[in-house]
Image (cartoon, rainbow, N blue to C red; front, top):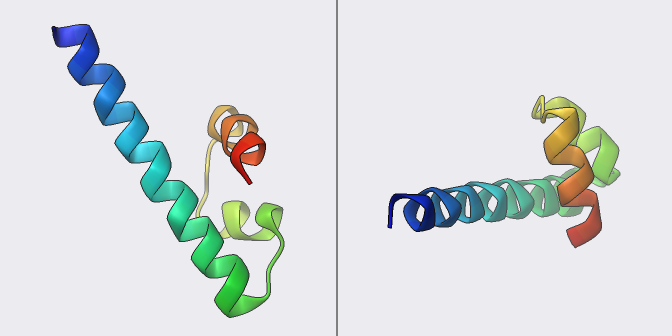
Length: 53
């Protein structure tokens, strides 16, 4: 069960990041890369998030 909770927490974290990136892209007219750079998103997370955008 602990693994399931960790996986859920990771999904929540990534979904939150994704929403923040989308908001920055819309409100600031930034590219996904600009938004992720401003938020200091890790390279590993960037790869996963770019697939979702």
